[in-house]
Length: 338
Ligand SMILES: [Zn+2]
Ligand SMILES: [Zn+2]
Image 1 (cartoon, rainbow, N blue to C red):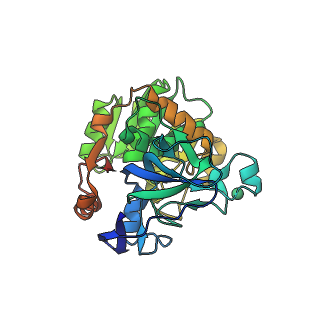
Image 2: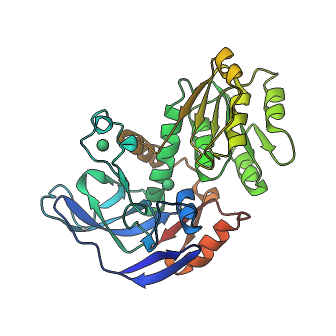
């Protein structure tokens, strides 16, 4: 089968590789749409220590069941599915609590084993989610990224009626922003430094867009809220300054969710966190319930897919990844279709 293989930093090669072997309780999925994640891009750039070449990247995907492994009886060849791409250990306390996304033994497509930028992948029965009949494969590939947004906003005690800030509107930040509006926040501000992205957020109804390279975001948000700050702020960048700014923008008693993974050490005004009772929470991936909820939100067909997705073919892999890596790309979510 054909696969787009990450062979060295900044290099992808379309290669002929063996079709994965079916094990008991798994199915073979013919991949039809795969989204490119920020983490795939980190891998491509050689910045991810855990993505070691040669490796097939890609974990945001949908496709058709092509073959059933022994013991799988409730799926048929041709069934259309999205695949929950985390394979938890199933035995630890986190798995028992339904928090399999923070299972220390979890394994992920395109990281711990070959991913979906290939014609076929093997998937456990428990990871398969049927696509509604009228949902496209491209929409099916968005279930995973939107599940991140579902999970991140699930960390906020009260979304409806809130004044919110989304810091960084790359694909995940943009989905969080869109979902925050769909969940009836009173108003949402976004901060970014990419004018394309700020333009898209504005089009999709952001109440305030702040270009962080032109004005001081904390000042802008405090002015916008008459000095009060926002009820909740999400950092979808991960840079230490952005994280610190989300804390500085939060109102007393507010919630800050960090989902971005750009940097490690972050310096904060600890006194202000204590005296203003700011709650800081991490958000990492998504559980099975978030994945299901994401699927049902996409099934409503209100998501503005045209302003979000650009489609490409596997043959264009190298040039599309180069473009994304340039930092000046106008692409939001790149989805390879096959
Ligand atoms: Zn992802
Ligand atoms: Zn586990």
